[in-house]
Structures are given as structure tokens and as C-alpha cells.
Image 1: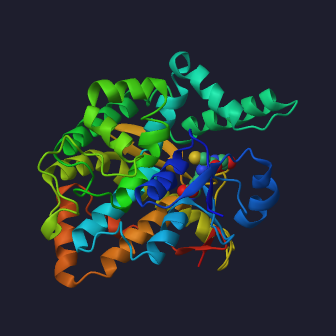
Image 2: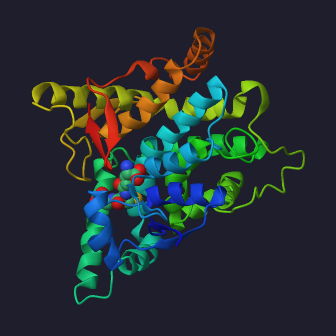
Length: 373
Ligand SMILES: N[C@@H](CCC(=O)N[C@@H](CS)C(=O)NCC(=O)O)C(=O)O
């Protein structure tokens, strides 16, 4: 028996876990969440109907991309975690940026260009449903649910131009980085590469409209997306290459420039989301162990924040703070002088203060759900 990854090609979070398995030479088979075993055998243990979910070869069920990666990292000597302070924090930041910070452009470029994308999307949504008399109706239901996500994450007629401008600035900055290095921190992928791949594969690097933009305007990013889905290093164009993370805890300027672009909405949105979730926490009688997961479309908090003079509104999701908490813990584990270096790095990227943003309660993944502590 081998590991089974319940996933589908067009799922954002599946791309993160799949790439980790491929890059680390872990053999697995991929099974659609439309397969009858998903509902019958996996869901009772996964608790929430999200993908990816892994069933290990020993039969353990692990829901959530971060938890799947952590399972293998812990077992195999943490091959994708940089060993130095700044690189650990930067890796964690890109994990957060990918899994939360780029949802707006990912949803926008998937759902707001039906002429270019709809046939492609319909194929994928249809085939993630089993053969069934209501297959088309279920397909439409799922597509409508996900289309609604674009609005939840803050894309509307007024914000569309800003969302596109920020994405293009990010994409071009990232392209300059991957012109220098095949991965975020050098010559092999770190945890941050897998998180960043989530939006940049299934949506922005695969759906026809954004794929076209990436191939035409950011060929180095496009090559990284390809590379992240191949088991070998796949960097022949980098002639003077190495095999490890960049030496001496160095963070290239090209990557700092990417962080500067991302900071423009990441910081105000995280501040606003924390305020929103904290006021819900203060007003409710949540106790330790209560679930902190949110189903799409059922967020009870909203983050309202301003970017370049324009107000944006987006669902405030606790998962952002689960990811942020991991970075904050890595920072806390550093020596004082290392923390000072990290502080000045973040200040230089307009991300000063990010590591101080906290919810009133910590979170933990327990039995496949995030819970409040
Ligand atoms: N925190 C989870 C999120 C997984 C998730 O939201 N997956 C999406 C597909 S990319 C999903 O299953 N959505 C269905 C839903 O929310 O009902 C992870 O990182 O694995």
C-alpha cells in the first residue's frame, strides 16, 4: 500500500501538498475527492470536507496541507526547513503569503474571465463529481460556491484594477527573483515555496487567462511552477547552480523586493483581520478546544482595510493566524541578535509589526481541525 492523496488538479491547496510529495520523492497515488471512499472513509476522520487530505500507507488520515507537510518534515529530519534564522522566517512568510495573501488575485483571475476560463473550469469541476444523474447540477453548485469566493476575498468592480495592479507588480518582482535563483532561498525548495505554489499553480499558473499572462510576462515564474511539480531539481538554465539553500543566512535583494510589494496589502489586511476576529472572540463564549476552522462562505468576520487609498473588504479567516503563529514561534525561538536582524529585515520591507499581530487565543491543529486554545 502507498500513501493516497485526496486532491484534484484545479484545487489551490492540493498543489501545495502534491508538490511537497513530488519534490521529496515520496511515492503516492492521487485520488479524486469525488471518489466514493472520500465521503465514506475519509470524511469521518478528516472532519471537514476540504482537500488535500492524505491517507498514509499505515491508514492515518491527515487533513490540511500544512499538517500533511509537517507529518513528513517531522519524520524525515526537516529537509525543507532552512536552518538559519532569517531564512526560516522568510520561508514561513512565503508560506503565509501563498496560503492566505494571494487568494484575491487567484480567485479574480479564475472567476472573472469566463470567456477564457469557463470551458476549462467546467471540465475540472464536472470530473471531480462521480457519475450521477445530478452530476451537472452538482457541478454548477460547486462552481457557484467557488465563484462566490472571489467576492468574499475582496474582488469587485471597484477593486478589480487595484487587485490586478498589485498582482502584476508582485509577478514581475518574483520573475526577477527566479531569474537569479531556481527556488525562493536558492537551489532547493523550502516550506515557503510550497505555500507560494498553492495560488501560483492551480489558479494563476494553470487557468487559461492567468497562465497566458504568466507565460508571456513572467517566464521565470512559469518555469518555477513547472519545476515545483518535478521530482528533480529542474534548473538547467541556472548554469552556476548549487544544491542547498543560499549560504550564510543571506536573503537576496530580489526577494526583499517581492516582500515589499506583498506588504502593501498583507500588513493592513492582517491587522484588520486580527481586529475583526478578536472582537468576535471577545464577544463570544468560546472555550479551549472549540473549533477555529471556517467553512468557505461562513466567515463571521470581515477585514476592512485600505490599500493605496482604496478601501477593500475581505473575509477574516483564522487560518491566516494559524500560519502567522508558526512564523511568530520561529521568530521567538531565535537568539536576541537574530531577532534584531529579522526585525530590521521586516522593517526594510514595510512589514515591521507583522510578527506582533496576535489573536487573543492561540490555535492548534487537533484531530484534523484547528481549535482555539
Ligand atoms: N487549510 C486547508 C484548506 C483547504 C481548502 O480550503 N481546500 C479547498 C480546495 S482548494 C476546499 O476543499 N474547499 C471546499 C470548501 O471549503 O467547502 C489546507 O490548507 O489544506
